[in-house]
Length: 332
Image 1 (spheres, rainbow, N blue to C red):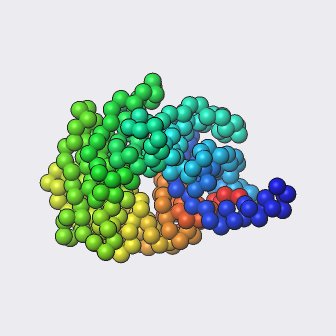
Image 2: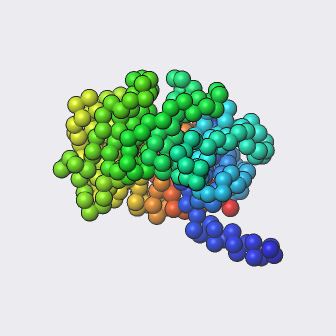
Image 3: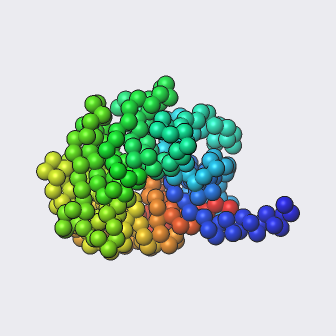
């Protein structure tokens, strides 16, 4: 292909690109972002945040094709970047990535019931308590993998449609999973048993049948859970299984997290919301992407503490003060 044709093809790819996943390096100086073309871009936060930053500083220091399909999920251990796509999980050593060496360290496929099955892996969740990884997606199952041996130790089954999101309650050895089937399921990781199933769409105050029953985002903090998607974004008390606050947001939310005394969330529309637990909207922060898929908070390095937001764009917005966008990183 001629260089000019390659330039046109890349311009079209950038125009149609979505960034689905993000993860910060163990040192806190780099951000990994996975896109819809199977690429992982590594951005230097230290270079982009420096006083001498140029436009080049906001482009990837390295970009490589990790999977044939989209990179739906990323997470980082203290040594490796883990990436997930259609039916496969891969590991990349951070020490090699930052030196621009992009050879995979290992690859695994969950034990699917059929060899013909290639379901996407939508969510990865590290469990540092026992050095395991939870992963879930299109086969309606939460798989647990021992990171030391690479062996899949157990499977949590109960959902009837694909799983969008996971959240860990590591102090209780429990996890939560949110699915297209409209339920949030609560699992005991010690026994592999289901503690309870919350059918969110059946609670009148949360239900929005015009948007569907799917659960797209999920986060926990001690005895509290926030979840949303088709149903309204809602704060729940887990012990009593009670919806305590329904947030007044019309768009479906794709990502939510607890931060200090707030909930940060984003989804359909170019906006990050700062929500008080009482239900009030403290702030609406405009973003570059027309819809947002992923929020990432870098708390691994105090001098590089930023919030990054990615979605239906090749740009990733960076917030140093969480009240406004400072600049955007961008795939090139």
